[in-house]
Image 1: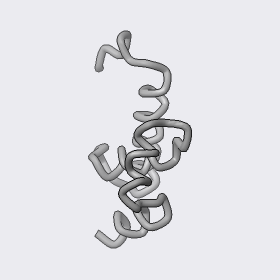
Image 2: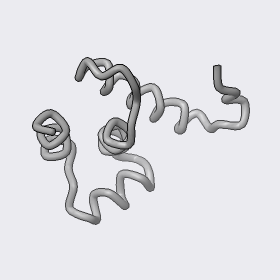
Image 3: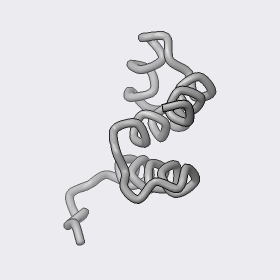
Length: 68
């Protein structure tokens, strides 16, 4: 298991959201696609702002991951 003692609460929450995204899609591992989906769910973060600035949104990103 990973040592998360130096992780912020926000990072742990994001990683847990990514894990939930992977599980919902019946994927056996968490990858960058799941992390992006998780960041797009956490609207109060810098990660969300950066990804949104590039034109991404959760619905479109989820659709693309499912299609892939």
